[in-house]
Every structure is written in structure tokens, then in C-alpha cells.
Length: 261
Image (tube, rainbow, N blue to C red; front, side, top):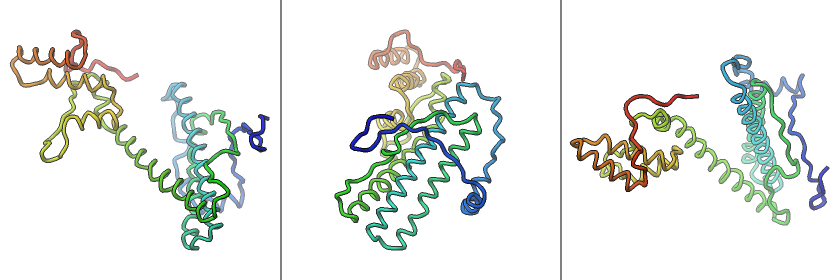
């Protein structure tokens, strides 16, 4: 046991989950039948190397823990709403949030089990989520938790996740990785109100490209320009100088040189 912090033991406990089973589980399944509707047991692990499976197990174990923490935050907010005597219909509406998070916990945990089991994860059960000061009034505590957990936490995380998904689905990163002659362009600045600088910023901030990726895309654009060869070569050399690239750096040709591992 670790030393006490403020009179509370600062424990490092193993994160473990269980299902009670029997009639309690049957009632839970009736409430959220979609969990059992997942195609459990159909993933062929032989297609994936051990290091990939280990990384996935770590990821899904961590996701289960984070969803568990979100469930605690939802329950704490619900408690604060009750203490503040918030409108009954509002409290009743919020009662579904902890259940939603528990379903997410189970989904993540079962995915970890599907790919070989969860990894060891230790946590401090006394400091799982943010709690406002206890000297605040019940109304202010409830307001603080609603704003912190839902107006900021959920409202910020969901757009971030959506942006991450869009970035993962965009083909530009794969095209550059495969050494294809891909460039970053703008359509019609006067119509779309966006210029090349905006597109470069979006490529880095939303798609996760590095500055070197953008420089190669710019060099490729110069190398693909519709100019006589001597003029095009001078333009490429000028871009190399302006971008701080070595003179030996070349834009990709039309063949696929990269290979996925």
C-alpha cells in the first residue's frame, strides 16, 4: 500500500471487471441486447503478428478503463443533479448515461478478450475523475459537473474523434507514403474562400502530415507543372532552395516505391 494522501490511501489497484450473471445479467441483456448481437468469436487472429495484437490489447484495455472513468463521471453528475433537486424529467433523462458508458466498457473489454486478453492496468480508485470542491453549493456543484463532463468533455471529444476518423480515411497520407505523385491543391479560392496556405495548415493539423510531407508535395507540384523542361527544372531548384531541401532530393516518380509492412 502506498502512502496516504490527505488521509486517503493512494492505492494502485488492478483494473478488473466481472459480470454477476444469472438473473441480473439477463435483465441487463434485455436492457441492451445489442451487445450480444455483436459477432463475437469470428475474428481470425492468425492474420495479425504478435506485436500488432499486443498493441491492440493495450488499446482496448485502455479504452475500457477510460469508458469506466466516464461512467463514474456520469454517475457523479447524476448524484449532483439529485442533490441539487434538478427537474425530475432532466434527472430521469440523465439516468441512461451511466448505462451507456457501462455498455461501452463491456464492448471494449470483450474486444480485448477476443484478441488474447486484457493487459495489466493499475489505477487509483480514489482519483478516477474530477470532483468540484465540496464547499460549493449543490446547485453550483451540479452546474460545474454538467459543464465539465458534458458541455466540454463530450462536446469536445466527439468532434475530435470525428476529425480523427476523417483524417484516417483520407487517402493523401497513404498516397505520399507510397511515393505517388500527390500534390496539395485548392480548387477556386474566390468561390471556396480558401487558399493554399489554408490547405497546408489543414493537411498538418487535420491529416497529421509532417512539414517534410508538405514540402515533398510542394516539390512534386513544381515538378508536375506545365512548363518547358528547362523552366520546370529551374522552378524545382528554386523551390528546393526556398523550402530548405537538399539539392539531391527528388520528387516521386509515377511508380509505387513504398510497401506497407
